Length: 444
Image 1 (spheres, rainbow, N blue to C red):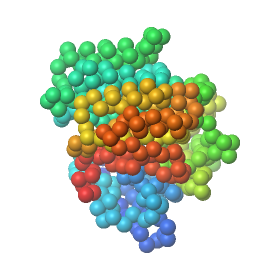
Image 2 (image 1 turned 180 degrees about the vertical axis):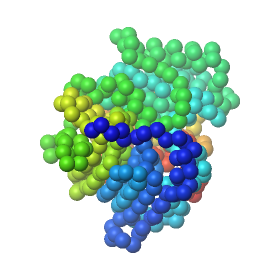
Image 3 (image 1 turned 90 degrees about the horizontal axis):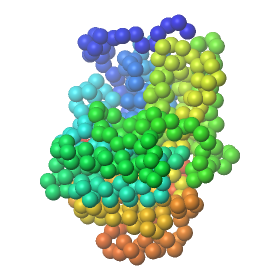
Image 4 (image 1 turned 60 degrees about the vertical axis):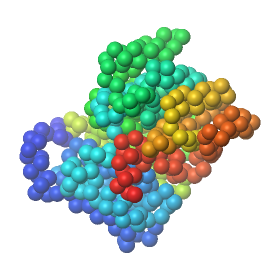
């Protein structure tokens, strides 16, 4: 293909086009018996599919089907969505939010304050830190201890591990003033100590600590960090979750000769946020989705994407196709957490995360994913754990945890996933830092 998918658009012209042809959004509860239809018609632009999927995903909505068409200058989507219980979306404030977030005033009214984003290195009352390195048992505990010893309070965090790598986005403030830390000397000391922790005994030069500069959705940023770290290379390590043959991801890339597209087909176990993870990865690999069909049947999901590279080319070489397959499989696996989820709720206090992760480490538990959030004075920490060898956790260890925690924290233990589409944890998205604090008020 010699054509270019995305020629340069003057921003003022693009804004004018949007004003002349504003997005049209409808939330339809009458056309389908078992789901709500969210329809979006708008001017086409790079990244618009990811924006729409991100809004629906951040509301913890389950996308059961979707039909995407964005050939030419117009973008038309239909999403079949349900809430976490598999019911239609009937809450008026949620519907109002969808219409505003995806509608003509989205840039003005909603996305400026209701995004689950990584902020500029010091924004408001928090400082955002990104860490990536080689994972090992107890690493999260060591990171938390360093922050506590340097008088940083962890307000929120998202932690992912995959293929022996760990990526974290952590929001901290000063444990005395509860404000962002701007002292460059203090930040430099923290950065050096965290780098030493990430490098470990093997002096892993790939371990990195940095401060977030820019505004990117947290989950997308974690995908970007692990992608840049090339976690998709090599085989799946022994501690990674494996699937039964019927549910193992099957990804193919073929050519649609008559239309000039590459067709990416994904069949795997269905789960929450699957479409977001796939679209996010394709977008960050500089591929444009022109058409797509998404469906689910029981525990299985089937997704088909008609794509081209940003320069208008299809995937011609076997090397390109193999890379797309590996990257999509990594994106699917990063969020999969089988085993136990531990949800601990307690009154927020300085050093809480350090204490909790120390207890997990001392009981021989390895954290595969974690979410830390603070709403007012209440802190909720969600950990997906296995033992240090990657095996299921013995019930005796859970009882020992309960005794050690005592009455200072409430512990909820759940085997994951109880169902293929069940959300990761109650309120994981809605209570996630910037997005959570503000969206909870909007939906209250």
